[in-house]
Image (cartoon, rainbow, N blue to C red; front, side, top):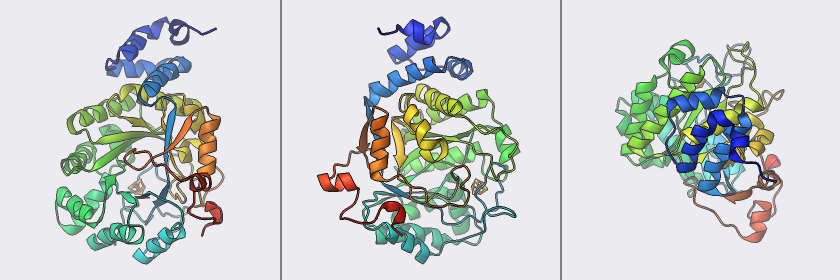
Length: 388
Ligand code: SF4
């Protein structure tokens, strides 16, 4: 027996359901109602309609490697557990040779994307950033380099005494392929002032995004939720991103990022639950009608929540990751090895009743030979987590 939409969505959300059915854009008020309703099932049901309309059962993932090249930072964001501070992680700054060595660790795995972000370390030169990109292309010539939030782009431009646009051009000449989009957390002047006042604000963040779009750089976008932002501020963030993408058309994927208060200045904030994570994914899917993909980042909201999220609007499960130093699994602070093997990623997606599709950074499907597809490697090697 199948339930009618009225039974699942409820009378009070039927007007939004009708908009979703007809592909009508939702308003900011609709977004607030979707966050406030206790009927998460109804919100997820509507998000899944959009997700399946766009992607059917397909769930995308990428073979990626993250490199967080330094944790020295002069921005002191209150929500950040990554930057080096007393009682927190020790400071580090990777040399270009160290980055090359890390890339070599995974040379025998078919990585297609290297994702690099780091702190704002005033000691790093303009040339360092160029070399950072160049060393990736030298070591793994075919990979896609996704690197630098808008805050880093601003720092790089300042170091070089050039405009955002010129810094981006130089980085593209060195091999930069896309921008990961972070750095603004929530587009709200109040949250900016209270939590990350030393970083660039919303207008500057948009200005970097516009400069990158003008140069044809693909971009991704994020939202850090679950700290001090209100529901209205979350919705405003989504609406502003939607408007920016109407203008530039360069955003391909949105990732809601779940805030982890451990080791931050906001340790008193209640840790988030899967319930909140699922709602953020679902509302993002419904509001961002001009973003093709919504990602559930398993590092931040766990593989288990990611499995459920594949029925709440998410069509992307990120990738294997390998090392990620910005957020750690609960109780695992300091463990830099965070990896889902190819097999585990596919099993996780299949168990959730979805179809795993390996993609490149621009969402083109990658088809592997049978043996390689099964092992995730070119030839028989030790498991990824031991491949160092
Ligand atoms: Fe620095 Fe980024 Fe952490 Fe802010 S979020 S303190 S800019 S590393």
